[in-house]
Length: 187
Image (cartoon, rainbow, N blue to C red; front, side, top):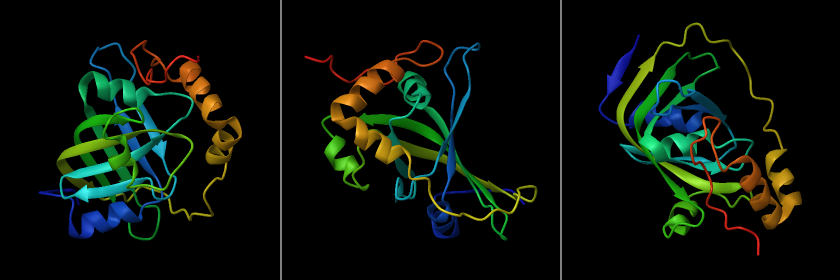
């Protein structure tokens, strides 16, 4: 049953790196703010940097709740679930920071991932708690394939179109917090 670990290593690291999908949970500091859970799943968008650090490539999408919450208070949990014959759930709790595509250290962090026209940030998580639980109630599912929708959608928009989309959809969170408002105004 459930255990806690000193670090992301050995079996836990292997498990995390093998999962085709994970979930990110964040919340604003205010009691009346919305808790957010975001699914992540594009291949090669998560790396275990060291036993206490993970990073993932954050892609332009319909919202930017994680960025807003992380910039406000840094709290984050990543959850990985096994949907195959070996049940398991791993949670990584910690503090995160946003490395936006206009930040000085963007190139260093982005180099850890394949280039993607939807990339807007790298979320770097300093993990302070690693735990697992049984996962006995999770369904058995098999991965058919990845969806090939987000990346081609952003390719069709082109860099200026992606930036315009982010200015429209990603500048503030659903609670009105500043989110990804980094894109410069068009000239």
